[in-house]
Length: 155
Image (tube, rainbow, N blue to C red; front, side, top):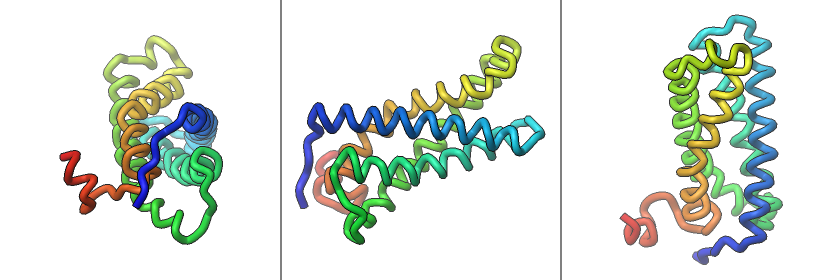
């Protein structure tokens, strides 16, 4: 099992992929929210979950291909499970932070229609501060999330 260090070039590609996927995910959240018609906590939460699922798949494919230069071989897809675990953690954090930003800070009163997008984008950005290092360490480095000696040494 080899471990990779992120180079500046990889980091730049990771940021570009992340920005692109983030824009697509926010756009998907807006589109899904519009299609759901009713705007309440449940439909807002559902729109975040659905948009995030699209973002998870797109992010894995683009990072696998462009950031880390891998192919879509069966071996590379074995990393997808770890990626999904961390993405789901990211989704939960994004959802929680989005709700806290939108409803805790009363962004609807401050920003009107833009509150939904601002809260979601803020939640995604803040949660990425934890999810990026976990992905670079455990998913794309070749280490496993649990049960490996590398994980045991870190905990």
